[in-house]
Image (cartoon, rainbow, N blue to C red; front, side, top):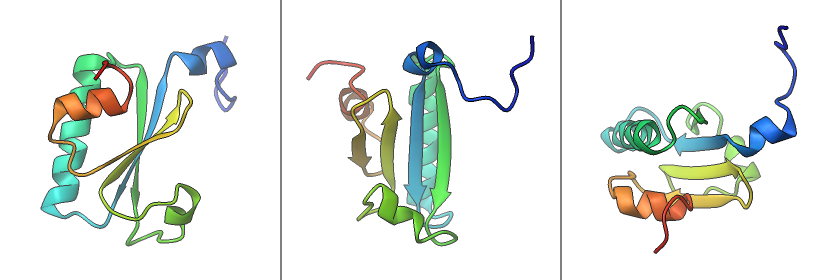
Length: 104
């Protein structure tokens, strides 16, 4: 049975990470943040994630919703609670702790 166009069931959503990466253009720092995030997700979330990249040069008003004050910034929307990590995400350990995938 196809369920295209429907919201994910609550049980399915609980097992998936919904991440937003806020950037400002295609700068080396923004590109590094995306590459680092993709690598970390592939290694530690095994396909249980969705990344949405938001370019604030194209959509500056979107920064207000997640209260973005610096870029690049990663926001974990789901599972709750919302978490933020600022920077190019080059420290895998820091990202894993920030996403609550690993203890301090």
